Image (tube, rainbow, N blue to C red; front, top):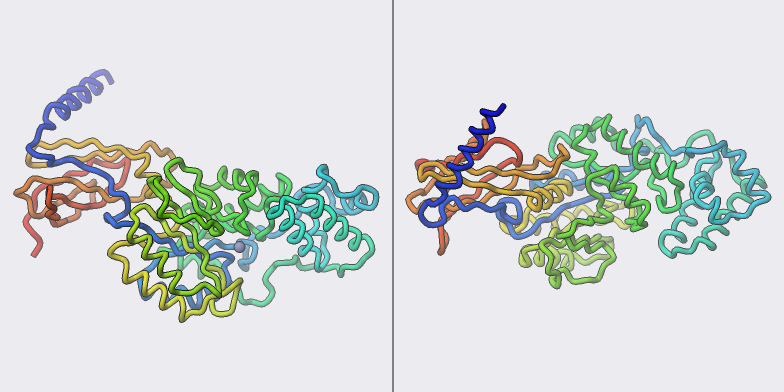
Length: 445
Ligand SMILES: [Zn+2]
């Protein structure tokens, strides 16, 4: 063991003493965006409605675009976890509502249980109370909605049902088999909870159930890679809900608390051009009435500004789902984004989040002896998810016109880019893996 330390010490000394190559050859940086582009665009879809797959996917395929789908796992046929109430018997809760009004002491339990009492029509009261609380912070009004609902339950106003509410019965849902084949083609799937509730009004046990069981379902059907991202329904910014989500997923679309990221959500009117942070995560939600010209201007800004990650949030497509866009509009818009691909990197939600974090947590050491430049790319991110290759830019000697880049088993041949001040190459490297070796190569035919 002692010998190993001595050897490492000597190597370090050699590296330090032989850095004085002429000019700046060997100098290396991680480019701000993948492939040295000027910004990023992520296409994201919420709720998993059927035309996202039947209409939007074939259009995206023609452009080779990846995308991210936030799916409600309880809606997919064959899922193990469905909407339920986690807690004491609901009969006891109903009985109690006859004598005790809803207050802060029982609000969350009652809001969690109301949709899952076994009656048709009660889930709507969860949504109404949840909206009042989540968007207006009005717990009193929300409590009265629950009182009304439980009174109706006690009076027998609702019809008992055997089948859970919210469970698909029209046979028009995407299956896990189809999702798996889309996942194999590079599409990202992500959690949009089990039943799409108002998380802000769930008690801790039910909040955890919605977040963890949807993650488990996705893990079982699609694998670890698709457990990276989450979107808490209705774009909630409720602190307790979002904090719980961020404990269980690497990234939430609701909030990206990273220090170097300005986070502008869908409802924000702040112009991203005014941001001076390293990155701006700019979310825009195209709705039925949103003009395509406005949508195109978001892409233009992303291409021009340099620090924008444009996150587009789509819901319905061709008449199915909330505020749908038509397939024709999507084809036109995606064609426009495709025409800007020289400047913008189109990538899944998780890939852009990974790129930003790996770069922010990355460190580079280089060594050059004139013949070979070796580059070590390290990152202090410990989670195994962070294995996305990054784009490195390394300056090379004037005489080089093409470079062979080797990292482990992988070899890339890249041409030297001649710039005013220096000559450099762009290539891909994985952090926390083998050293990258750059050597002079014959120019490509
Ligand atoms: Zn949703």
